Length: 400
Image 1 (cartoon, rainbow, N blue to C red):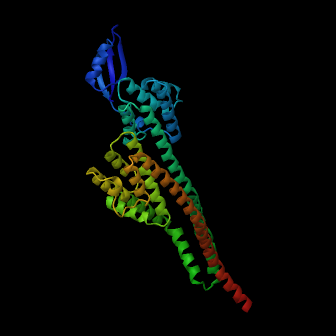
Image 2: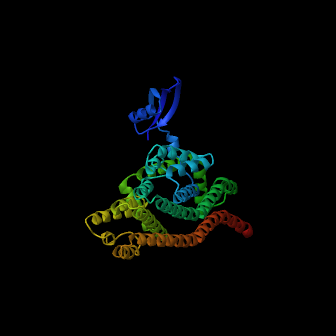
Image 3: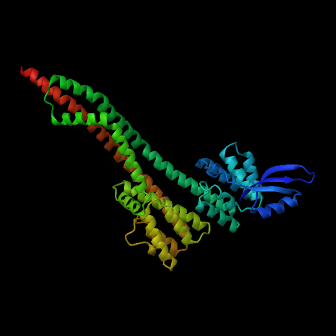
């Protein structure tokens, strides 16, 4: 809802300056005259972009939704409930968000419209659930489903992040160790070998060459890495390159299965949420496809959506060689033939999320020894490059 800066005169002739939200300037003038205020100047105020970008941490957002649901179930109207929550919220992002939503709802704006102002916190598919709850007079149920959905999505993200902590730490530590050896230790041994005029083996010569390249060519290497990241980021915006990247990711051993099951869980979760909120299936499929996070699977869902639009059931509309796990078709068929599509999508979501966690655990179990073996091999190769010339030197001394 637009905001206006108002310069008005009240009944006592006192000039007043304040800010007010209203659907339009004409309606605002009517509201001011009803309050015996005579507008002198009305100026549209630009939206506060910083306020619109507010995003709450998942636990705070879920807690806010649960508190709102409890008040609505207790019979408190939305205006009063939002005002109470705003008054009780600690200073910070939550209070600012609730105060903004409450101001607009108090002026007659639907809750879902007021929530859309915070587009990062309430993306279109979440705002659509609130809108469906308002339209069907089942707002508490919609808020509860929304909280459960956000909680499940946050749990998936936490699982993926926890899974990445160990390999990232090991890779960083390995890179730092190798950089230290190449930049600090190898040059010292190179000087010793040069002073002794030893005939060096090929592995030692290669290691010294790499060390010199790292020491003297790191600015060029840094520029190349930065340019590579920029080019990859730019190329990722191309739909064709995105499709190629996602197709390759799905074919990776172990990790491909994790990506496949995570994308399936995201699709099922978002599609179920919208479907149970009363959103038409075609719209739910379109949104679910957009939120899979994998362009290959999204394209297959959009192709299936076109077939569903002409009367095919979803389980039969999926391509024959789809990228989804095999269990999705029997689950969808069971749900659609019994009229329990929401329950089927929930089963797919939970089962796919469980399988993704299991695959992540398997990937980590394989990754740990692989990283340790790689680290051992690198350090061992560097140590061998040091010791081979020393063995040669000691052999020459013993021969004499």
